[in-house]
Length: 291
Ligand code: SAM
Image 1 (cartoon, rainbow, N blue to C red):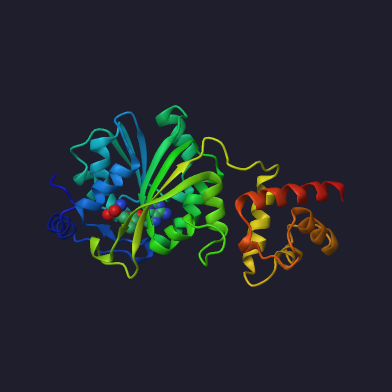
Image 2 (cartoon, helix red, strand yellow):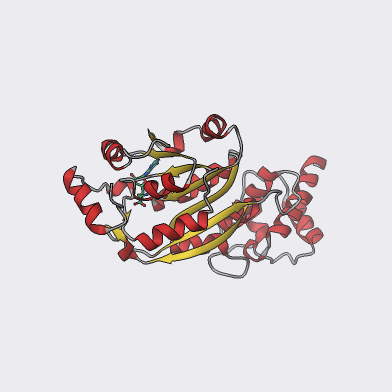
């Protein structure tokens, strides 16, 4: 099978199967061999690796993954793509296509079965509307992960990488940086896809930390605090927390905790670093226990 990264080959497959793009599944297929090579290079895949691909489409990137990995599992939601993948991946005996919604798949079990529970690599050109639930789902369910190399909307890639004091900084930045080291490895313009998306894209690699970078006693509480402080962006940290049903502390206790952190009462969540959120969560956790 000729590489699908060449536009004429993708068009030939789409015509052969009379394929209709499904907007609801965020289908924009890659048609640029340089971008495909860049993703493979950035993911650092070797013949020892088991790779999970999310959303293979017609199998464009899957072909490259089959060439470079030991074994590939590709999970695709659109049933109309399953026979096409049987055709475009027919030459490879190291790939399994699963027809399923990735958000419903037990990835921990898959990693156990296919990689004896050792860390897996995830590669995906994601539909933009499920980027955050997929990434957070992978991290929070503690799937054994080495890295996630993904194409996302440019703006979302920026959000994952930035620190305090920038307009893109938020709950996603903190969550990603708590679990992994994010690095944007390529910017990808709309003309590298068929059909063209309306926004620019970027490939970002998230390399999981061997050990989380901050000492936090109650991870869940820290993320509740982070969410509460970014839910109301224009509000101060104190007001954000006062309005949160998850933080069971009086206004005075919240103010005391902020003072204990060494911050003014007018501080906004958007100016705190991950280390400060962790320290603050530890203070709040102690106060909630005392209370
Ligand atoms: N990887 C292909 C490429 O680069 O050309 C296709 C990328 S396209 C942006 C996203 C793919 O994810 C589509 O094939 C779509 O059907 C699939 N998809 C969308 N939602 C999904 C879900 N919840 N689970 C699995 N696949 C999904």
